[in-house]
Image (cartoon, rainbow, N blue to C red; front, side, top):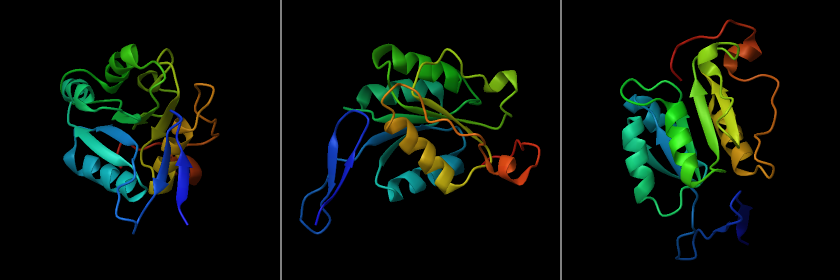
Length: 172
């Protein structure tokens, strides 16, 4: 029996393992300037059935997006070390695809001005560091399945929120 998944763009993908053909998998652009974190995010989303393409800077992300036939979503760090930041990457990508689903990763607490995602359009989810695999996948699935352009509301985000600790600026 084939397993099927419906994605935000209406595409239907089938798990055809063992049937000799490759299923079409959603392509996720991962924009992260720290290679180890990018690899970890890539491993998590690939294990969950997505394809990942990577960019180490905002400029590289914009160039990479032009080479991908159908970009399903973007996961971007809000603060990139060199060049344009994650907010600007998302604004540029949404000029050609206004409803591009996005997960914006931040080490800033929700009330910090640096974590403000207003004006970016949607669907957009904020993922506060540190986070675990399930939170990443839930955020990604939430923006991909959005039908109204908004990410599902969650009352708390990040491991620190669940533990009642102050947010950490530690990566992943």
